[in-house]
Length: 585
Image (cartoon, rainbow, N blue to C red; front, side):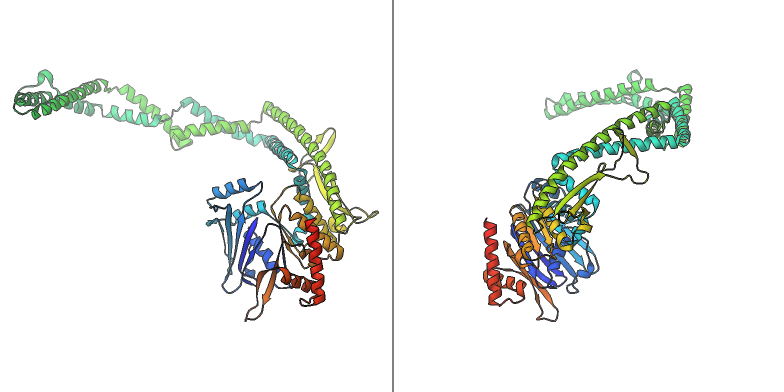
């Protein structure tokens, strides 16, 4: 839940902090005092579009900060996501969010003390907050949103079915498009495949091996310089161990080391430290012997065969022919060949491949049809439950004869969209199934069933929206619900019922309500008032918590515009008493 919200430099609000509770938080105030800026601030904090026109000229930037305590079933996943993004969560399980917008329109976001993209705030907001206002009512009028709302209401098993359908649908569409493209572009594909085959045939004939270029280059270098290498190795070998050719006048290294060792050993009885040096000379002589043996083996391995050199020249010429055409080096040529083999499978337009693809298309089409039918049945069942639940809520909102129906009807195929036949019936399927969903309102018995936007007045639409939200609340969703004057156009008994419904929601959710109705405000667990300050040169607004007698005075102002009227205060206290009894009951 959102524990605290601080807003600075936004609209008429200079600097104010809202301390929020876990129940029902009501925000009231005179028209123009800045209640809307609170909702605007919430929108900014959770990734909404920044409007530089809302930023106060002084200080030239608006800042919205909030402390969010992570809780509920989504807490672990959300906490992990925030941590993975590099943010820090406080020891008490809360995280600080902030959004800054400058008067030039620049925007910055922070989560847990770390700079983040604004999209991260949106991601968090989608999980923890749902805002309902006039614009949100318009959103619910869109068919796609109505279908999505019904799917969420249907429950997790239905959503799993929908995910399975989407996966199969995506594969089916890919096969349909692949098959159509192969048939449509068969000639061009065949020409491209022929070119690839020519290249593969040439590469296969040469059969290049990984690292072959370097190996051949090193061998050529040895063969081209074989005589110089032989002379160097022979000279070194003779210097180290000339054997019979060595003389006292021209001794080799082995002889010199032997002489040195014997000389030291002769004097080791006088100074034992010379024995250690003599031993090390013996080790050096052994090492020289090993090197000498390796030089002899190297000399034997040297090959100045002109025929072998010519073979290598020819092989390198073949490899250069490939690297001129296909890649910069032999390893690149090998990689090109692998890619060409993969691409050939895609380009194949043979009858056998087309027949296999067509079989796969038919198999997936049958699955799509099956899952689409199961989705339709599940939606129809959920529609009945949803309709009954919302209609019950409407009865409590002073619309006792109204009924909301959810129509699940076959969708119309869009242009160039494939239609499949399932159980002898043509079905227009899309990414979300074969259904269109429409919420319809029967305002009273005998009235025609009309879409919400045509069958509901402004006040009725507000109550229908609230009834829907109450029903949705039982099916999960965000922990914090914000209602921005959804009670517009409502009064009397209906206003009291709206207050009751919001209070009921507040038992399981954190609820923030911006309202002008005292009947709704009376049900608040925390009442915040936005008040103007016109004492300075510039009008500003702040938010304060009102309790006890102050709260009664605010309700009196809302009732009759007379905060100090004894009659108004008495009426307000009566409202508070009624609301208290309802909440306890």
